[in-house]
Length: 76
Image (cartoon, rainbow, N blue to C red; front, side, top):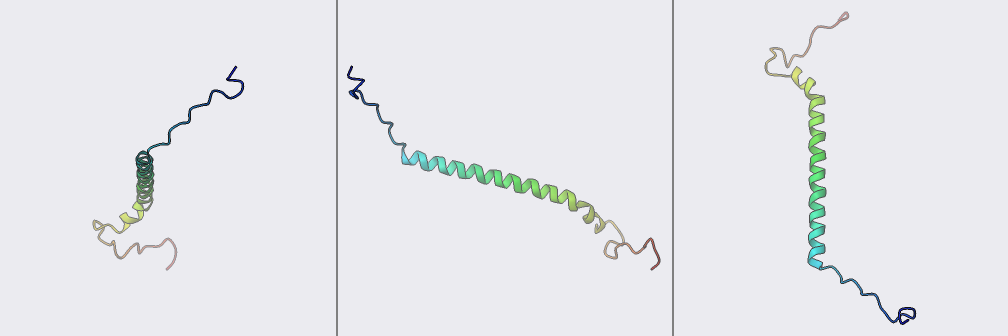
């Protein structure tokens, strides 16, 4: 019957070690940084594919790369 009147107390959980908490925060920050770097790398690749066609117009293999396209479809 002592349980009915609060005779038994619940054990309190021990506080986490501050070193472990700091290590977990560092690990979370590292994971976030890796994810951010991966997103930036993917965006750069996507951007390179998008701009790649324009870059080929200025390629060294073309003889008139710096002159550009001189022919037009209409009257000049």
